[in-house]
Amino acid sequence: MLWDYLGHGLSDRPHDPDVYTMDRVVDDLGRVLDFAGGEPAILCGLSFGGLSSLHFAAHHLERVRGLVLIASGPGFKKPEAAAAWEKRTNRTADYIERDGFRAFVEGKAGPTCIGRDPALPAARAAAESICAQDPVSVGLFARRVAALAPSVIDELKSIDRPALVVVGEEDPGFHQAAEVMAAKLPNATKRVVPKGGHILNIETADSFNAMVAEFVKSLA
Image (cartoon, rainbow, N blue to C red; front, top):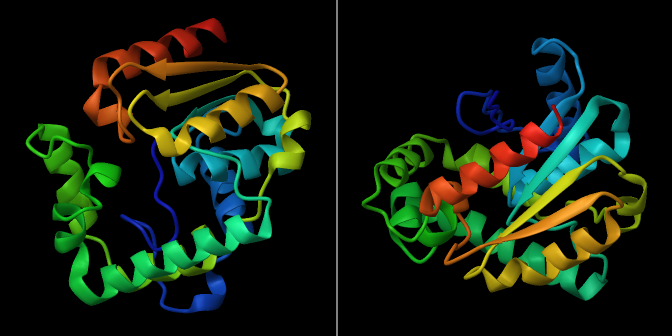
């Protein structure tokens, strides 16, 4: 099952800054699982999706059967690193609101949101979905949730569910984060996708899908 964060995709797109919080993200995910039947689930998230999955697991471990953490990290514990991330995310939100999503996906950000081969059918579909969003609500989510997301590094040791940590060989910005998660999560396996960038599910779909399928099968 796929779901859209508040302000994204087919979800509500409020322009009230106060409704955008990490607590709301965790609560919304819980409601999605309720709708799906309420059984413990395997949470699969790419980039920020991995961090939000870890936040959910830290608060509701009994609802988690496993984790697939793709090109992601546990957040920034050092104040200076957190401040740098907040500044960068706010700058991205400014750009989206000023120039729109089309310029975003067709510019320097393209490789980190639709992959490095924009001609792929899946990349084109992702680009159109991104461009159909509301820049204001996505900007609010970026500033109020993504930019301010607390670190869960200290909570990793208590998240003992099976976890698959996946990172692209050619996505160096997430190698250290993958190492940290693989080392601190009690039941984690790290896999590196050869020649993979950030958007592994589009760029290297076959090898990525095989890794995830193997992991899910191991939990059956």
